[in-house]
Image 1: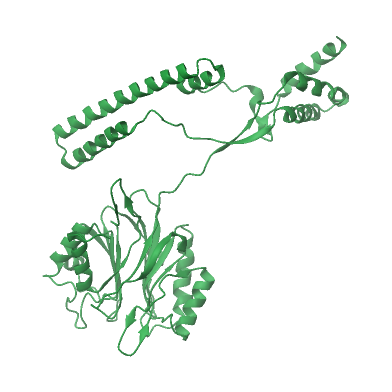
Image 2 (image 1 turned 90 degrees about the vertical axis):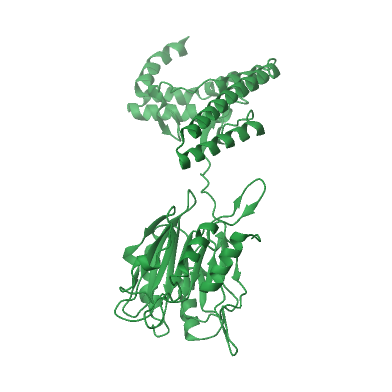
Amino acid sequence: MKECPENTALGNFMLEMNLNQLIITPTRITDTSESLIDVIITSASHLVNESGVMDTIKSDHLPVSRNSFQKTKTEALTLSETWLNTTITNAEIYIEGYTLYRQDRLNKRGGGVCTYIRNDIKVSKLKEISSVSENCFHQLWLKLQSKKLKSIVICISYRPPECPLSCLETNLKPSFVQALLLNKPIFILGDLNCNVMKECPENTALGNFMLEMNLNQLIITPTRITDTSESLIDVIITSASHLVNESGVMDTIKSDHLPVYAVLNMKLPKPPPRYILTRSYKDYDGERFTAHLASRSQELISIFSDSNVNSKLDNFNNVLLITLAVHAPVRITKIQNRSCPFITTDIKNQMFHRDQLHRRYKRTRDIDDWRAFKNAQRSVKSTLKAAEKQHVQTEVNLHKDNSRSLWKVINRCIPSKDKRILTYHKNTLEGWPTISTSSFNLYEKELPKQLKC
């Protein structure tokens, strides 16, 4: 997104190796800038030539790749049709700071897919659905998670021209259904040799597969242009198009295969709101409640003619709770997080400086950095305590003439403690307290005496 040496280095690297860009991690936003820092790159280039000799990544090209990756913080590099086999070791195509995952086509020349994943990214290879089938359909399934962001599932796929279209139904579909069980966004990318811009059997087969699996294809403009034709065979298929902010084809003259990309909005999962049931005593009037309950005295007295104690208890609870619901109705209340209005911008800056010192110590392990961090930590704690104390004093002085608001201020300052659970607090009717049998038996003995009075 910015003209800088890092962007130039990555651009030269992609042009030289005929790579496409697919951005899958969120935009990092600070107080002063926005930047795209995590990238997935796809390619349809060979790592070796038809003779089996290292071609695209040569010994003199590999240091350039390493430098580009280190500067741009690229998260993953995926390659299709690598032509790798057992004669090519991982050490020959090693990139520092990355782990290689590969799916070679054995017993036949050509094909193959692979990906480089940065070491700090959590990766799980889905081995049970990653394979090269007998009809030469390639699929490498990985689950990725960057930091604390949402996990996603990617499939690097390749369908050679001689591979039958039935592979979408017999190979890709079962793997996709199994990946759905992970309940993660899924992205299928690669060269399927299906021209989606042309009415042909390949386009029809891919369209039927996407329609059945409820998938969307992001790329809509040609990805391969020659002097006689245009075609769209490099695709990005997803089950979560709502995560895509932008997608398209990048213009380049390096190769007839144009790079394709998609920018995704990957946010931290937002916790669902919490709700509780409470009784509202805002308009409660004790005298009116008592009068209303007295008007239903016949229903209360009728329980003495019932020989079943459980039925007696149910009738009593129904009368009591229904009457109470009129004067103190049940309401659903959303629990709000406790606010901290006393945390000012200066305090936030101190906390940010403390975190910076802690990250510095984790890198250097220097005792001076540790002491600086501990001093900053103690300073933040003391500043927070003083700010909270001053805020509480201000609130007390502001609401000293309003007892209700004053008690709210006091209750926020008092640590919550576990309350003793009484026997009649067990929720057995619509989530609200009912009276235990023992308490009801005692009430049953005393009620006739009170009625006579």
